[in-house]
Image 1 (cartoon, helix red, strand yellow):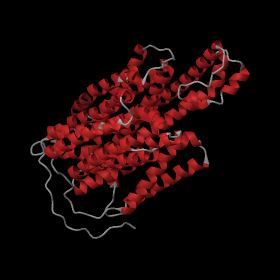
Image 2: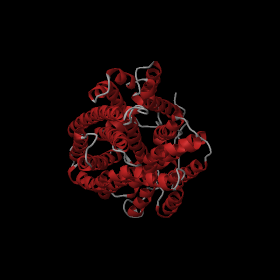
Image 3: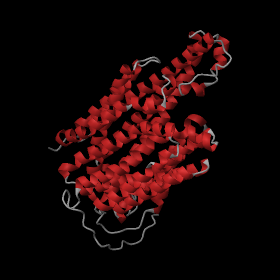
Image 4: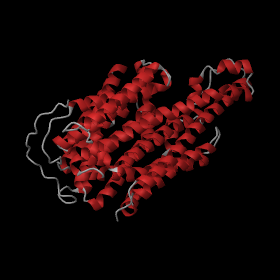
Length: 521
């Protein structure tokens, strides 16, 4: 039974006149600052984990939760954040998210224990969920239809570029300042974002009747998403076929199915299921998830390859990924213009095919590949992701009515987080399993005696991240053979993960070409 009361009439707040009173381009500038905070934070923290672990004497499990606590809190509250914006005002909820995210960031820098860091990272996730979906809802209210697609393209460009720039900024700060500085960076950025938002943003909200929140829907969605994402995160370490993982994921799926059933029967749903009757919106959300599955999953093992196989520093590896940022910067607005003129039915498949080409080109990589050989994959990842994001953001946002703009933004943002969670877990798991399966053979082929190769093959964890089993006290020639064999096993795993990503992108391109409606123009 839904927890509702009879609707209470509310004073209607007029929506801003698109493209005029809403000061659209100033609004976009304000949204760019907020999106940059989330983008930088999503990719910069992993570089600080070793320093956090050293300073706070944290275990590997504790460090894992520095990322996981944020991911779980963000992914499970995004749709709620959009719904709050639709009801109480998107400007109000957005600025609340910015303020809370800023304070939580400073609190992390001041933390004296790993437990405090994890707790405030979860707070960051909750406030990020208030911020992120309402950026899209605010843009929808501010821009006229003819300009909205371009605005979304620029939004997607800023989101992708700030995420890709995170490793560069984080690498510099961690190496030359401290790990705390990557969180303190959000303090001045947050203050500027609040001031710009207070000056330039217009209030917008759903103008329908105010209704009580669907509390059972909130609880079921949180249980379902938390269980599934937690199971994905822990799948590799606990074993994908373990009873605990199967029970956790099964519980999550059951809760999500029950959530969908409940939402079709409550008069005031948290997530109106009618939105998914729009085929273009549904496919757009799926393509968003697939894009970040490939993008974040690939970037995870690319960073392992650059730092652990090619022995680059964090800053060096971050600089090497600049073509990804530049490709995204160029492709997102260009994709928005093409989507406006030709339709998402063209730009979505083209972007997915570019992502597929990036993944398949990785099959040519070896341990000693030159940077020139890596460059095409990195650039195609940026161009493909920028083009797809421009098309899918427009498809999802315009596929929903104006009164559900915040919820639609939540759907888009949730797709990003869930896709990234699946990508980093599934692709890295594929890499690790393939590396483990071929390790003994590669060590033997490199010249390691069979008995020693079998013994060293128990150290699968080190090889799965591009390292080598312990070679201390070994003769130099034998140690070199162990390194060569271990590196080749890692490359086998990288190729398996890249091939899988490429096949999924081909399937996504076909789905988008067949399922998305043609451009009505």
